[in-house]
Length: 126
Image (cartoon, rainbow, N blue to C red; front, side, top):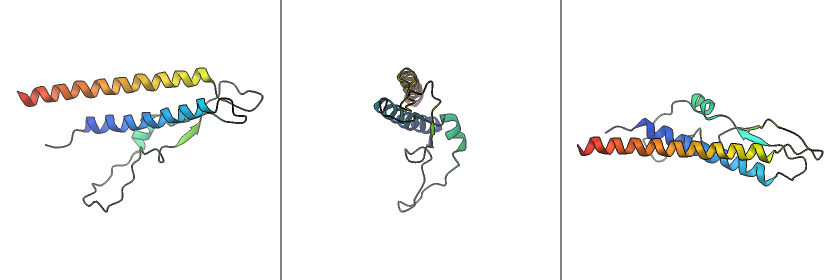
Protein backbone atom coordinates (compact mmCIF):
# COMPACT_ATOMS: atom_id res chain seq x y z
CA UNK A 1 0.00 0.00 0.00
CA UNK A 2 1.42 3.38 -0.98
CA UNK A 3 1.70 6.40 1.23
CA UNK A 4 -1.36 8.55 1.74
CA UNK A 5 -0.58 12.15 0.97
CA UNK A 6 -3.38 13.55 3.14
CA UNK A 7 -1.62 12.29 6.25
CA UNK A 8 1.67 13.85 5.08
CA UNK A 9 -0.05 17.16 4.40
CA UNK A 10 -1.78 17.20 7.77
CA UNK A 11 1.49 16.33 9.51
CA UNK A 12 3.26 19.20 7.78
CA UNK A 13 0.50 21.62 8.71
CA UNK A 14 0.58 20.44 12.33
CA UNK A 15 4.33 21.11 12.46
CA UNK A 16 3.78 24.57 10.93
CA UNK A 17 1.06 25.28 13.51
CA UNK A 18 3.48 24.26 16.26
CA UNK A 19 6.10 26.70 14.97
CA UNK A 20 3.52 29.48 14.68
CA UNK A 21 2.24 28.84 18.21
CA UNK A 22 5.80 29.06 19.59
CA UNK A 23 6.33 32.41 17.80
CA UNK A 24 3.04 33.69 19.23
CA UNK A 25 4.09 32.53 22.70
CA UNK A 26 7.41 34.37 22.34
CA UNK A 27 5.55 37.52 21.33
CA UNK A 28 3.26 37.30 24.36
CA UNK A 29 6.19 36.56 26.68
CA UNK A 30 7.94 39.72 25.46
CA UNK A 31 4.86 41.96 25.52
CA UNK A 32 6.50 44.28 28.06
CA UNK A 33 10.07 44.12 26.74
CA UNK A 34 11.21 47.53 25.51
CA UNK A 35 12.09 47.58 21.81
CA UNK A 36 10.75 44.08 21.10
CA UNK A 37 9.24 43.71 17.64
CA UNK A 38 6.38 41.25 17.20
CA UNK A 39 6.96 38.55 14.58
CA UNK A 40 4.95 35.93 12.75
CA UNK A 41 5.73 33.02 10.44
CA UNK A 42 5.03 32.99 6.73
CA UNK A 43 1.59 31.58 5.83
CA UNK A 44 1.36 27.80 5.45
CA UNK A 45 0.27 28.14 1.83
CA UNK A 46 3.51 29.96 0.96
CA UNK A 47 5.67 27.46 2.84
CA UNK A 48 3.88 24.50 1.28
CA UNK A 49 4.00 25.92 -2.26
CA UNK A 50 7.70 26.78 -1.93
CA UNK A 51 8.62 23.33 -0.62
CA UNK A 52 10.45 21.45 -3.29
CA UNK A 53 9.87 17.80 -4.01
CA UNK A 54 12.43 15.82 -2.06
CA UNK A 55 14.13 12.66 -3.12
CA UNK A 56 13.43 9.60 -1.05
CA UNK A 57 16.08 8.85 1.55
CA UNK A 58 16.89 5.22 0.83
CA UNK A 59 19.70 5.04 3.35
CA UNK A 60 19.67 6.19 6.99
CA UNK A 61 22.90 8.10 6.30
CA UNK A 62 21.19 10.40 3.81
CA UNK A 63 20.68 13.92 5.04
CA UNK A 64 17.43 15.60 4.13
CA UNK A 65 16.15 19.10 4.73
CA UNK A 66 12.68 19.36 6.13
CA UNK A 67 11.11 22.59 4.79
CA UNK A 68 8.77 22.79 7.78
CA UNK A 69 11.32 22.21 10.53
CA UNK A 70 11.31 24.95 13.14
CA UNK A 71 14.72 26.23 12.02
CA UNK A 72 13.70 26.24 8.33
CA UNK A 73 10.45 28.24 8.53
CA UNK A 74 11.18 31.92 8.02
CA UNK A 75 9.96 34.33 10.63
CA UNK A 76 8.89 37.77 9.49
CA UNK A 77 8.14 40.91 11.38
CA UNK A 78 4.46 41.02 12.22
CA UNK A 79 2.26 43.91 11.23
CA UNK A 80 2.13 46.06 14.34
CA UNK A 81 -1.23 47.39 15.45
CA UNK A 82 0.49 49.95 17.58
CA UNK A 83 3.96 50.71 18.85
CA UNK A 84 4.32 51.94 22.40
CA UNK A 85 6.72 54.64 23.54
CA UNK A 86 9.19 51.92 24.56
CA UNK A 87 9.31 50.66 20.96
CA UNK A 88 7.42 47.45 21.70
CA UNK A 89 5.04 46.44 18.89
CA UNK A 90 3.30 43.46 20.53
CA UNK A 91 -0.48 43.73 20.71
CA UNK A 92 -1.85 41.15 23.13
CA UNK A 93 -5.26 41.30 21.46
CA UNK A 94 -3.71 40.50 18.08
CA UNK A 95 -1.63 37.66 19.55
CA UNK A 96 -4.69 36.14 21.23
CA UNK A 97 -6.57 36.26 17.91
CA UNK A 98 -3.65 34.47 16.24
CA UNK A 99 -3.56 31.87 19.03
CA UNK A 100 -7.30 31.26 18.53
CA UNK A 101 -6.72 30.87 14.81
CA UNK A 102 -3.97 28.29 15.48
CA UNK A 103 -6.30 26.43 17.84
CA UNK A 104 -9.13 26.34 15.27
CA UNK A 105 -6.75 25.24 12.49
CA UNK A 106 -5.34 22.45 14.63
CA UNK A 107 -8.85 21.27 15.56
CA UNK A 108 -9.89 21.28 11.90
CA UNK A 109 -6.73 19.44 10.90
CA UNK A 110 -7.30 16.76 13.58
CA UNK A 111 -10.96 16.36 12.66
CA UNK A 112 -10.17 15.88 8.97
CA UNK A 113 -7.49 13.28 9.75
CA UNK A 114 -9.81 11.47 12.17
CA UNK A 115 -12.64 11.38 9.61
CA UNK A 116 -10.33 10.21 6.84
CA UNK A 117 -8.90 7.52 9.09
CA UNK A 118 -12.41 6.29 9.93
CA UNK A 119 -13.33 6.16 6.22
CA UNK A 120 -10.12 4.33 5.43
CA UNK A 121 -10.67 1.79 8.20
CA UNK A 122 -14.29 1.24 7.13
CA UNK A 123 -13.19 0.54 3.56
CA UNK A 124 -10.43 -1.85 4.68
CA UNK A 125 -12.69 -3.78 7.05
CA UNK A 126 -15.25 -4.20 4.33
